[in-house]
Length: 320
Image 1: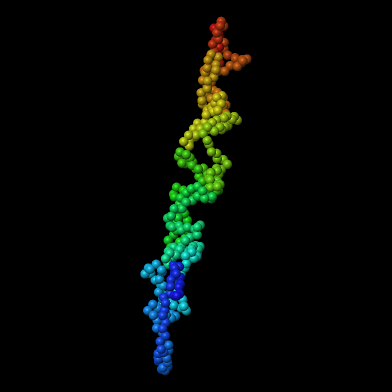
Image 2: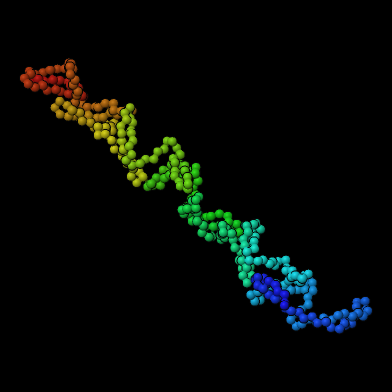
């Protein structure tokens, strides 16, 4: 029965039977010039005699014309230094163009060819420009989608380029807060990030976020009154007073003063954020109970008194 062997694809092959037939001894001339005799061997048509150093052509078992030239050496075939043999599932090192190790994969051999290298289940190949999903720390939730940057001739995954309208914010980073409408009025803020959720904290203790309809207070002239904040489209609006009995007075404002026979219009005086007085018109004067007047009095009293006022002072009285 002929011997058998496994080929590069793992198939069982048979070694052709070599028929050796002894022949009568044949004379031959040695290198020293003497005649010797040796046993002659005849090899059948299905075999061949080889010796160390003979070239051997190695082919895959799938019948392809591809082949490698090996050398017969002590009963085995030695492949060239740049050719290797591997079996399916053998460990195969993976290196980048800079000869840096990127871990090990496993060989995938099909019909005598190394057709691929399987990566470990937790490894992947990322090409330049490939989409890279950025998620939370627990691998849930899409935060952004970037683009892988693998510079030419490096095989090094260098970074992920984010779209122009995305940014990476780290806890403690500085963020400028802008007005809603105009986009101006920068206010410094500090990023607060926890569990990949972000918020902004005002950086200055003298800065406050104003919310429409929030209560506030206004102080002036030693007085404090309640107001309601008013914000619309990111802009301040006039603050209404909370209490109907509070009022805002400005220097020069007209004020109505009750008089004996009606009302007169006075003028408000405001200084140091406080109302300092009311100035009456020249033709009006104030009279107090028990006031003593040293002014001319004319006529005979029947049922009327007519006052004369000039420069805010009662200057005369006429009885009638």
